[in-house]
Image (cartoon, rainbow, N blue to C red; front, side, top):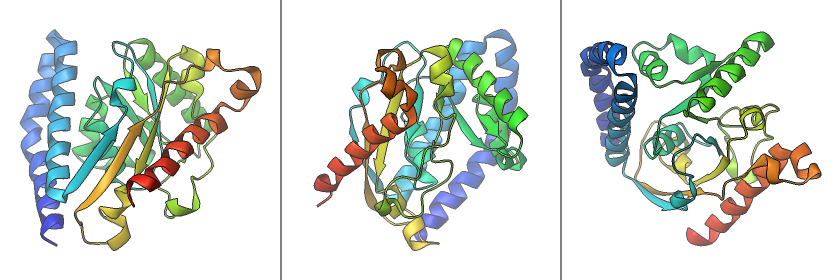
Length: 246
């Protein structure tokens, strides 16, 4: 219970204290947008790293050097916990927007930070809005801003049974921009909180970044089923993780 209290109190205090910070960043952005963007990224990454310390999550990170430097990418992780966002975002080398469910826009303060950090909000019931979101993501990638999307579409409550089917359109931004896809395999994040709600417990988490996937380098069949191909790469890494957690 102590870990839950620490994480909750820190998150609430951060959001409150960050109000003047956001206002300051908004002013700075008018004069020096790149500086404001990176400072916002580093502030939130610091907060997420503190949350992971309070949660007692010990990370084993594999293949982080596989992320291409100096260009935008499309991150494709599996999804089993809310902490997947905290874990992966805390390690993004450059500006990265996450694709989130539309209801997150209604969360005070948190949604303000998300908008500052180029997050995209997806309304799955509105096809027109979904297409607009994809076009905005393409625009961001072309400007050098990476995007992260969880192609399973929601948290997987039973990751031991395998990944949920990837949503159609998850890789559209990579198809249209030619940016590399970085598959990410996350094991153990569900052990932080979801497996024993409401408690947060100390645990080990493995995060592995796969080799970049360039769609234009795949053969015709692989390109046709690029979602399944990317999913298979994540599944291979997850299978390997089982031997690391024995």
